[in-house]
Length: 323
Image (cartoon, rainbow, N blue to C red; front, side, top):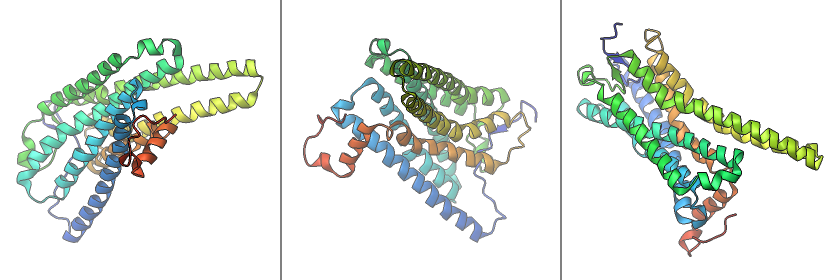
C-alpha cells in the first residue's frame, strides 16, 4: 500500500451482510451485556472517587486533585465512549453511524489520552513524594498540579484534533466506522507514540527510580533497626504496589498501541477483530484505575463506605477525619 493511499486503522465496525441473522443478534446481545457492564463499573468506581475528593475536605490535596482529573477522564470514557461504541456496533441505521463515529472517535482519543497523561502526572507526583520528600511540598503545589492537569488535557485534545482532522470522509462511502484514517503511515506511528509510548517511557523510568530509592531506604532501615523482617516487608510493599500500577496500565494499553503502531509497517496483517478487542481492553483500564489508585488507600476506603451506606446524606461529614 502506497503512502498516498487511504490508511484505515483497523478499528472498524464492519456490517457483515453474509453473516447469519441469529449469529449477528447473539453477538449484539453479548456485546451489549459486556459493554453495558463495563460502562456501569467505570461510572460507579470513578463516581466514588470524584464524590470522595469533592465532598471530604481532608482529601483536598494536590495529589488527590490529580486523581480527580484522572477519575473525570475515566468517568467520561464510561459515559460517552463505551456507550457510543455499542450503539455503533448494534445499530442498523447507517445515517446515524457517520455522525456517531466522528463524535466517538474524537471523544475516544481525547479522553483516553487524557487518562494516560494523568497517570503519567501521578507518577511524577509520586516520584517527588518518595524520592524528594523534603522538597515535595514546595515543588508539588496546587498551582503546579493545575498546570499538570491543564497540560494533560491540552496534549490529549491536540492529539485528537490532529488525528481526527486527517481522517477523510471515506467512512461515509464504505459504510464503516473508522476511528482513524490517514494518508500517511507516519501520522499513525507518531500519534501512537505521543498518546502512549512517551508517557509509558516516563512512567516506567520514574517507577523504576522509585523502586530503587525504596530499596535504598529499606536497607537504611535494616542498618539502623537490625531487622531483616522490616526490610522485607517494606520492599515487598513497594514492589507489589508499583508492580500493580505499571502492570495493569501496560497490560491494558500496550497491545492496542503496539498493534496500531506496527500494523502499517506489516502491511495491515493484524486482524481487525484483534485490534478491536485490544481497544476494549484499553477502555477497561478506566474501570481499574479507581481500584489501583484509590482502593489501596485506607482513607478512600473509609470515604467509599460512607458514600455507599448513605451516611453522608444523613449529616454533614465533610470534615470527618479519614486518616
